[in-house]
Image (tube, rainbow over all chains, first blue to last red; front, top):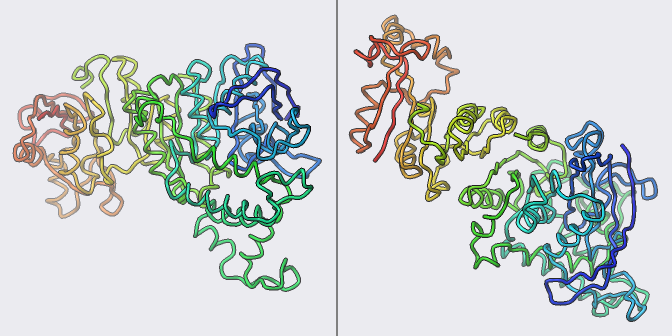
Length: 366
Length: 188
C-alpha cells in the first residue's frame, strides 16, 4: 500500500459558521493508494472525535496502526489497490492541522482559547478545498464513523454533486440530551483542572493533563458496551507488579488509568473541548426548521447507514431515524443493523456482515 | 403481478430476499423501491443487486413506514412466517394504497394427502420438515379470503397458480384444492 503524508497549506480565508474566519490554514493529510487518471476512485474518510489523519497502515514514528486499519488497505474492505483514500486531521485538531495549539500569527503565541469554534459544516467546507487542491471533483465515497459519519452526511447535503456515496456509520442526525450532558461533564473536568488557565495553558508552559485524563476515562466507558467490558476484564484483579497506582484493585481500573494517561499525553485539551462542541451542535435539520426530511431532499448520493446493536451512545434508533427520513425524501438509502460487540467503537472493527456489505455498497455502481 | 404495478410507483417489498423482484420492477417499471429484510446474506445480495434495503424484523412492527406515500407494498411468500400475520396485513394497507400478497396454499391436495397419511405436510414447494420450517401460521386460500372479508380488505385482483407457478384450469376452477400458490392485489 502506497502511503503519503503531507501537511497542506491553504491561503484562502475560511469563513466559519461562528462568524469568525481563519486567514489561511493547514491540514495534515495522509493518503493510501493511487488516484487514477479519471480521478474517479477517490474516497474521503472522516475521523471521529479523537481520531487523526492516520487512518491506515503502521506509522513508524509512533509505532501506531491507523484507526481504521482493519477496514482500509490492500485487499481489505476499502481496497487501496483499487481506491485512492484520503484521510485528514480536522481543523481544530491536534495532530498537525491548524488548531488551538497552532501559532496565531497575530500574537505569535499558540491560539489556545482564541481558536474559533468550528462545526461539522466548517470541516466539510475545508475538506472541499482539500478535494479541489487534489483535483478531485467528485468523491466515489465519503465515509466515517460517529462524528466522522456526521461529516459524511453533511457532505451529501452540502455538496450533492461532489459525492456519489456516503457511509454514515454509528452516527446520528443530532446527538441526544444525554450525549451533550456527558460531553459537558468531560469539558467541566478539563476546565476545572488548575493548569487549564482558561484555555491559555500553552503560553504558561503547562497543560491540564489530569483533567484531560479524567475526561477521557469517562468518555472511554461510553464508547464500550457493558458486555464488551465484562468479557474483556470481568472482575479480574490487577496483578500487583503491573498496577499503575497502588490504590487499584481491578483490571478495568488499571486499563482506564493507562488509556487516560496515554490520551492525555497525546491530545490537546482545547481540541477536546472544540471537537465535543462540534459534535453537540451538529443538526443539519436546523436550517430547515427542524425538518430532517427537508434537509436531505437535495441529496444525490446513495447512502449506507449502519448502526451497531451494542452501541448505547449513538443507538441504532438514531441510524434508523436517518434512514426513515431518507426514504421520505425518496433517496437511495440502505440501513444495516450490525451485531458489533464493542459498543460505539464497533465501527472501528472488521466484522463480517458490516465489512462485506460496506465493500459491496462501495463497489456497486448500478 | 408486474402488470399490477404502475410505472414510477413507490414500492416497498416486505421480506424482499435478495431484492430480485425489486430489481425487475426498477428495470421494467422504473419504480422507487425499498426492501425490508433481516437476513444478512439476503441483505448483502440486495446491496450487490443495487437495491435499497433496510435491515429489520418485520414482526417488530412496520409503523416506521407509515406516511411515506408508498403506492404498493409487496409481501411475497412471507406472511405465513410472521408471528402476527393479521397485524402485519393491517399495517401493509396503512403503508401503501395497495398490497400485493403471495401465499402458499396449505389446502393443496398434495399437502392434504400428507396429513391423511398422518404426517405433517411437505411438498416440492414446501420441503422443510416440521422442526425446520419457518412457516408459523399456515392457512389455505379459503382461510385467507375469509380473513380479508372479516378485515374489510378488498381483493381487487387475484391469481391462482398450479405447480411451478403456472396457471392451470384445475387451479382456477378449484383453487383451494389444486392451487399451489395464490397472488392477491389488496386494497381498502
